[in-house]
Image (cartoon, rainbow, N blue to C red; front, side):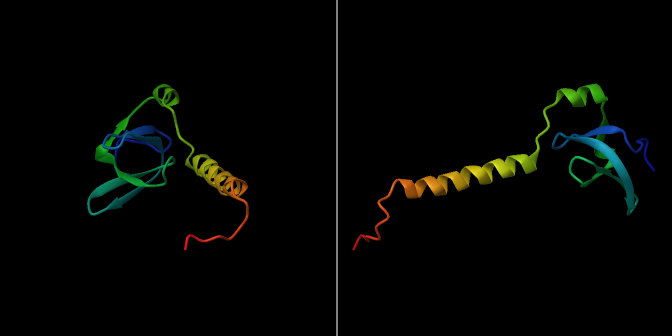
Length: 93
């Protein structure tokens, strides 16, 4: 298998993704580790072990929160768009 253990914090060097290993899978002679931060599997030979101290210093993004905030902004923009009209149905032609 690999030298990593479940619960160990690692970084995928190609994208900078950081997470803790939650599971391993083996396919065609390659070993993959699933990261908790993305739910995706990464080849263990592409991972770098990092300490928890380094990870806590990095800013993590909550994509669900970002998505909800963006939805709220769009909803507000749609509501405000009607406030700037006189509610008439005049066309341009």
